[in-house]
Image (cartoon, rainbow, N blue to C red):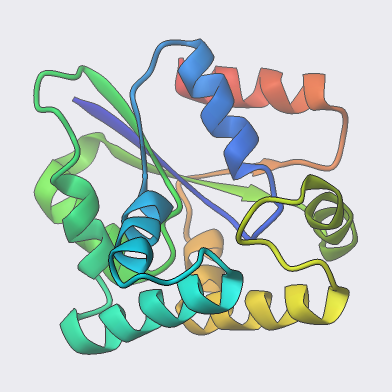
Length: 176
């Protein structure tokens, strides 16, 4: 099984990369869905504050790799290739590498803060904040979880500052 895990700051293009994987009929397991499920299970609305608090609390209580453990349960062993979306820290990557072996590839998607903030302000996803200050707070939280280290040590880095077509081409190349 080949596993490609996408990581990157909010608004960098991970969701778009996931869409491309789905267009190529590659199964996708989104780590954030595990956090959303836990947040809903607790009867909380899917706000950035609630989702972030639940994610952080679970990491503190059950280890930094808790979301990787929950994600791996969703992978069907019969798949020949799978995309994992939303890896946030080194412990998650270590867990995946230990469980999945050398066929695991970490792909960081990078875009400048200016580009990312513009995207985040325009996409209006349920757990997004609609102010630059809140987006910065979210960035800082994700960086505290170790996201910056992952981006620095990724196997592949895709720069997403150009057109959507350029980005799609880069992602398809990595996925093939």
